[in-house]
Image: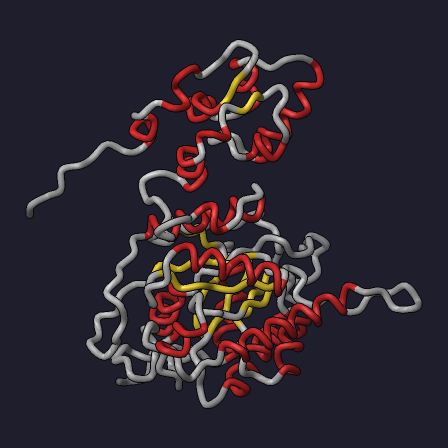
Length: 409
């Protein structure tokens, strides 16, 4: 294969980066260049957003530094035994692309991941060099997310955290057994140790010294990770339980879920599970319920351990626990209101505030912004009672999509 142009590398390595799901720019410190000094912004002003085929909104230049890799992870399209076309950016090329894309208002920052070339340390050193050139040589104030390499030297990861807004390390699979089976060159304990190091360094940076000063900011937008869904056969309950531990142990900002795309290569010996993107979507919804609504993993995905693909997890829980309903919107506790389908955290907060001034009716709930048609069977209001609707045998059918005739051709 001849030498690739910069445009050809960009086409190849931006497409290869689509398997990395964790690219959100929320949570960092506010920083811009309105004073005329530097380049970029961590805020979304003036950004032309792009949308990936699966619906994700992408406002970062999201690329791999290279898709060459010395590892042979069975689930990865870029593993060493794969026959995909290969390319590699130099650090200078990544910096050039980031600056030029920002100047054209295409992006708000950089999401950089990479295959492992030569060694974890060599690869991580190049990624740190890119971030340092952006920050120090070009005074770039936009958002930088680095996908760090757990096996790299701790001092390299520390340098990355001092330059980037967010760091992430891929746990990859929800169980240690799965990782050992399909990525034997990776070490689950080593990944956890590196993630723990990032958490400790971030917490240390937040502490004040004896003079009252804080240390240099370290990954101000936090740490995240990614779980691949469907590559190892783990059910949804196992995935959500793994997420719960990750959030608790490492104070993660996000766990991202990436639906496994079967690789057209006979050497990849993986379970024949092809989860649709709707499963990934349901896991994100379940994750949200655990983080903001007080649900536990075993509540959301009990018994068979799989989420219902036809209805959202909150509604599925409500239908399976009808004894908890209806909830009186005028007397119910916040925790109970949060479990009502159609009520979000903001609408619950508004309900709690509004009912201090008098009993709420059906129309009041609509004005508040609650999805009352969804909530109807599960609530009591001043002028509304669901009667027998809560226990109706056909209640699920009211919400589930109608059956479709599958095409024969």
